[in-house]
Amino acid sequence: MPSFHPVDAILLLLGVEAVALALWHRRTGRGPAPRRLLPNLLAGAFLLAALRTALSDGPETLLLLWLAAALLAHLVDLRGRWSEPPG
Image 1 (cartoon, rainbow, N blue to C red):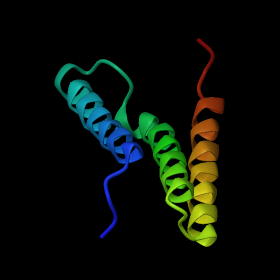
Image 2 (image 1 turned 180 degrees about the vertical axis):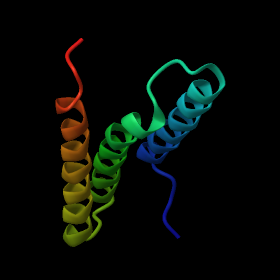
Image 3 (image 1 turned 120 degrees about the horizontal axis):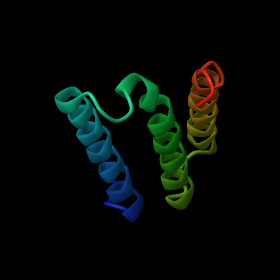
Image 4 (image 1 turned 90 degrees about the vertical axis):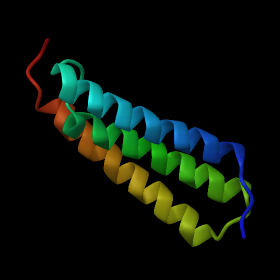
């Protein structure tokens, strides 16, 4: 069984942040909409998963998959930002 790694704590905090922001938006209607925020959070989570894989000497193919997923999430985030009106 894999041991707990400090990167795991950061991933957990990222998940808590996502849930807290979604609940805040739902309750108040303020802050970023979860669908707009999700690609950015996923890109960060995938990069952290890649870091975790690299630091634990995980398989290179898994590392490449995490990095590809991070790139895809980043591109989705950029596409969403690019289509937003200025201001």
